[in-house]
Amino acid sequence: MLAAAREIVAEDGAGALSMRALARRLDVAPNALYSHVADKTDLLDQLLDDLLAAVETDGIEAMMTSTYRTLTAHPELVPLFLQRQGARGPNAVRLGEILDRLLGEAGVADVPEARRVLIVHAIGFAAFAGGSDEWTAASFTRSLHWLLKGMTETRAS
Amino acid sequence: MLAAAREIVAEDGAGALSMRALARRLDVAPNALYSHVADKTDLLDQLLDDLLAAVETDGIEAMMTSTYRTLTAHPELVPLFLQRQGARGPNAVRLGEILDRLLGEAGVADVPEARRVLIVHAIGFAAFAGGSDEWTAASFTRSLHWLLKGMTETRAS
DNA sequence: AGCTTAGCTGGACGGCGTACAGTTGTCCAA
DNA sequence: TTGGACAACTGTACGCCGTCCAGCTAAGCT
Image 1 (cartoon, rainbow over the protein chains, first blue to last red):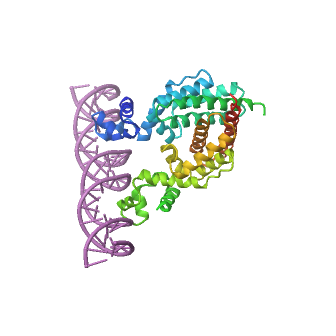
Image 2: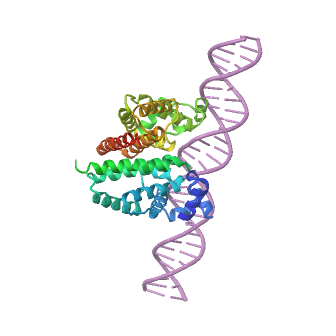
C-alpha cells in the first residue's frame, strides 16, 4: 500500500495522491483503504517517516546534508513535509535524538534551538529546491556551514 | 473580495478558504468570483502579495525580521506561502530588488544566493513557528545573525 | 437606439475524504 | 466439526471542492 502510494507520487506528483487514486491502483474500493489506515493524514505520516529511514547519521553535517538530499530526491513529498511541519513518526524521533546527542557533543549551547534551526534550514531549502537546480545544493552547504559555525562559536557565551 | 478572503482565513484558518465559502460570505454564487479572479491560485497570490506591502525595508536585518513578523502575524497564510514557494506579485518583486541592493552594498559575494538563503530562512521559520511560541523569535534572530555574519565574512573569498 | 461589457445566476461535471451497513473469507477455540 | 470472531472488502451515500457553460440583466458608450 505504501509502495503503491509512492508510485503514484513518483509518477504523477503529490497532488495526484488521493485515497481514490490509491484505491484505483490497488483495484479496490476507496473505503477499503480505511482498514489499513486511519486517515489520509495517517497515510502521509507513514509515507514521510519512511523516507527518513535512509538518512545517514555520522556527524552533524553529514546528517543534515543527507536529510537535504533525501528530501530533494523526492521533491513531490516535500510539500507534505511542510504541511505537517516535519515528520512525527519513529524515524523522525530517532533522528532527532541522534542530532541532539551530536549537537551536545559538539558543545552547542542551546541544543533544542540548534536542532530546530537545522531542521528548518534543511526542510526549507528542500522545499525551495523544487526542480533539479544546481545552485541549491551549493547554497545549502554554504549556509549550513554559516549556521554550524555560528552555533558552535557561541558555545562559550 | 480580498478583505472577505482575509476574514475567512483569520476566523477559520486557511483550510477554510474555499471559493464556495468566499462566495457564501459575499452572498453570491460561487462562480461569480471568476469574474474577478482567474483561479483560486490567483486569489491566493493576490492575498499573499498583499501581505508583503507592510514589510519594512530599512536595512537587511530589519527587512528580514519584518518579513518574519509579518508572516507570523498571519500564521494561517504561511502554508500558502510555502505551497507557492514564496509570493510572486509586485510587492514580492519590489522587496527582492531592495534586498539585492542592500546585500550588494553590504559587500556580499553572491547576492542571489544570499537572497535565497535569507528568504528560505524567513519563510521556513515562520512556517515552523505555527503557534505563538516564544522560542521561535529568539531562534530566528540568532540564526539570522549567524547567516548574516557568514555571508558578509566571505565577501573577500 | 443599439451594442458592448461587467457582473451575476442556475445548473452541471468530475473529483475529493470518509461514514455506515453489510458481505465474504480465514482461522482459532470448543 | 462447528461456531464465532475478526480482518478485509463492497455498495452506497453525504457533503464538500474547483471550475466550466450558457444565459440573464443593468449600466455605459456611440
